[in-house]
Image (cartoon, rainbow, N blue to C red; front, side, top):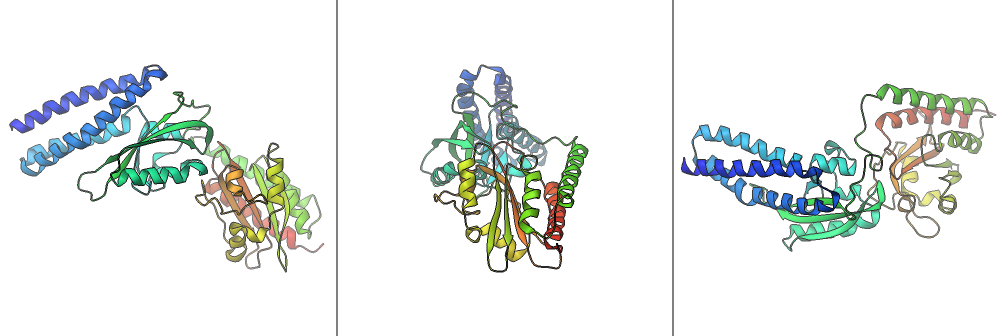
Amino acid sequence: MAQTDEFGEELADFVRRVAELKAARSVPADDLPTVLDAAIFELDHVAGRLWPWYESLSSTGPSGVASVDRQEQQLLKALFQRVPVPVALVDRETVVRRLNFAASSFTGVRAGYATGRPLTGFLAHADRAAFRSQAAAVARGEGDRSLTVHLQQQPAVPVRATLTALRPSGEPRTAVLVVLQPADSRVPSSERVPGPVPTLTETTRHAALMDLVDAVTTALLSGPVGDPAGVLERAAGVLHGRFADWVVADVAGAARLSRTAVLAPSDSVEGARGVADQDPAACPLVVEAVRGGSTALPVRPEDPDAFGRDTSGAPILVRANVTSLLCVPLTTSPGPVQGVLTLFRSGARRAFSMAEAQAMDMMSRHLALAMSAPR
């Protein structure tokens, strides 16, 4: 029992320090690095001393102690979630295992969505390879690392990522603890970093989608049918800006694919010209949509070449800062694919949802009917 009492005293001191860390959230932004160092020290203390001590007690102590220790284990998990700095636990492939509340707020990504996905998917394309390399080095035991990265939704805000090795108890492989903080000591406000999507406005979103379907259908009925290029241009005009930042329309002719419309943000004139000059046959997503006839809905696409490259050789998804896209084949079932409509969202705009993809699937059938109707 002496060891159990000693463990209890150590844990009580630890809980008091956690309370102090929680209260430190209100310190000035310039003092946050000191708080960060203290939080990392406490996390190391948990991993290196308290957790092995707990395992020793739970394996040799009476069953009554095990019940108390389970409560303490829950406390340690709560500490990870409540520590007032953005922290993520990833494996050597940067796949997220845990994301605490501060990290979820900082990145604008829900913990439930991030878990099981590579953390690099939330970074700018240019930073992904370097981050993977550093994470692998830390996992191999080559020492802690630190580098500056950029979140894909806020590419103008530099973020300092500190990586340190952590060996979870009972696991054969080393994990990597990632601590994130603004490189300029300014925590992005809720106005600059979108938070978790609220759930109380689902009815309003549904009404907005129905308004969009009505607007596209009205545009189709207001003009001539049987002209694939003309039908796609009218639909693209409705979808551009209101539903997507970029709209790319391709017609699947008897001989080859042809690009008929590219609508881009007003500050991307040169980029739009490069996309318009691209051969759709060199665009993997478009080719796959024509062959397979299924919709693609990648969020933060991992492959920068998924939509091919523009005439300058730059990956289109990187140049357009695409954070979410919809690639929809235009077909009536059964029937051949008559064209492909690709929609990009970029920057901090909310990613396409499953509900929006379903509405777009409905509109794709309307478009296919208008394209194939006799003149």
